[in-house]
Length: 432
Image 1 (tube, rainbow, N blue to C red):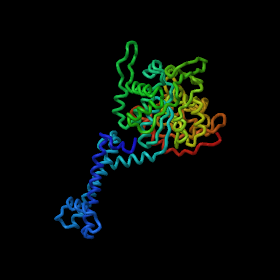
Image 2: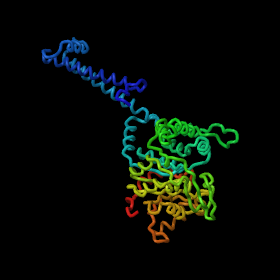
Image 3: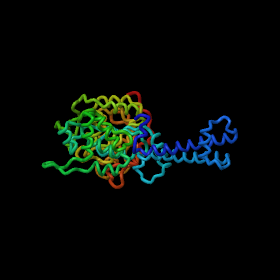
Image 4: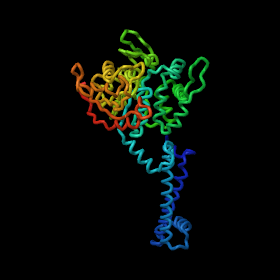
């Protein structure tokens, strides 16, 4: 926007500029009148003196005229500046109606000074982490896996040839200033077409339209929706293209697609197609600038591991300067990780490229009390042994109460964010 863009109609700025200008003019004219009284007007242009005296009331004592004009002008300038400040900050007040201007400024300033946090994941877990972290820092980036192929996202992916947008939508909603309003609208589903089990979510259609209007550019399309929702931080697709997830089970069966893999037990190995999928430049830049990198929470094989299978993302994680924390899920996931404890989760991550990458593990102290439940007694092997069976040093484990009280199998956003930002992490080891 040019320097004159502030003068556009409807911004609520011009009126306060005029008030401030009138205040400055009153001070100038009052000063002229006062100086003439002291210097008998010998050095001042007569027209300006006449204007000053007319505005400041000729019959009043010259000193009173000058003081009155200066005080009035100062008051007008103050009113104008306050009005300008309110007009500039008004767009950011939609999330908390009634909050004082001072509180808003203090909160915005605190968030702007927050750490640069990058979260990699997908699905519900990523959105949960973002809801808490956005209250701690404004320098927040979500890198979303592009392997989803179920529901409305899968249909749009097949019909329009665009990457999946469902997880992107959930993250945009989670980071929106007016989350409840945005969620109600963007999650609303239109009536299902004949033969389809569910209709499209409005948010998915909005993203699809934005991508189309940007000539198929995924990053620019997402950025366009950013501006519409007044999103804090950034939501970035992990890859420039849609990924097909391919898994092989322990008995040698090959399973294709995120939706099917989410219901598959005993997954042994994962790969992506295309295998050489490029990471988005924004994702790489975010990892390089980060102060803290968070992996998860989220579905192990269909949200977390796909990031590690993108060569450029894995290389950026290995070259990073920031510590990396893996957030273990509160509970096992039916099908995909059924029967897997924390050790098994960590082994799967390391088998797919995370060996030596993780600087800390955050697990919940709340247990679902089911056999094999993550966060319960199944974490004991890591708690009591600093090395694994092969003698390799394990990442330090931090056990915190981060489970939701209402939904014990999920994380509570605020507890999770506070725990993440307060972990006593060391800098990444350079021996990698």
